[in-house]
Amino acid sequence: NAGVTQTPKFRILKIGQSMTLQCAQDMNHNYMYWYRQDPGMGLKLIYYSVGAGITDKGEVPNGYNVSRSTTEDFPLRLELAAPSQTSVYFCASSYVGGVSDTQYFGPGTRLTVL
Amino acid sequence: AQTVTQSQPEMSVQEAETVTLSCTYDTSESDYYLFWYKQPPSRQMILVIRQEAYKQQNATENRFSVNFQKAAKSFSLKISDSQLGDAAMYFCAQNRDDKIIFGKGTRLHILP
Image (cartoon, rainbow over all chains, first blue to last red; front, side, top):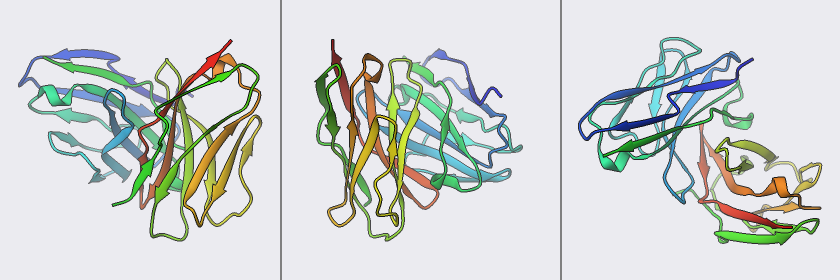
């Protein structure tokens, strides 16, 4: 199993550009999450999904969109990139028990918006 | 608002010694889960240990153990026989509904 994979690893965007961060898991997990980690800070939840076709907002959803058309994939869309979105983005997944079970994290995507 | 507080931004410990990282949390729930995650320089988030609030026995995983004080809402992590590979950021976290709330982290340095 590859676990949770994220692409790209690094990306530089100009203000106003759009991009999609890809996340995939091959563990048949039904729960998936997107977090951002700002320098010196913990993780903040952007969006999460408890199953295909179901998504919900986390703490900091503004400026982002998600979709969950399959169990495996959970892409995160940035529509109009802003410098405040410079961060490291982590995708995570867990099994049926949700947060009571272990969350498996991807390696992260470092995004810089200039 | 539910919060998780780690009051020690950085700590250092001599190799082979024991170190304790502090964490307090705030919740009105009676049943919940608490976690310690490790983030080494590779940035990969790794679950170190978790505790179910209704279990009175403190969780242990090899050299890692917790001191869970439910009434005080305290959840500290003890690392015994510290090793160079333990150097990392450590995040305390607690679940809320379908989400997990993370503290700001403690950076642990291991001195050879």
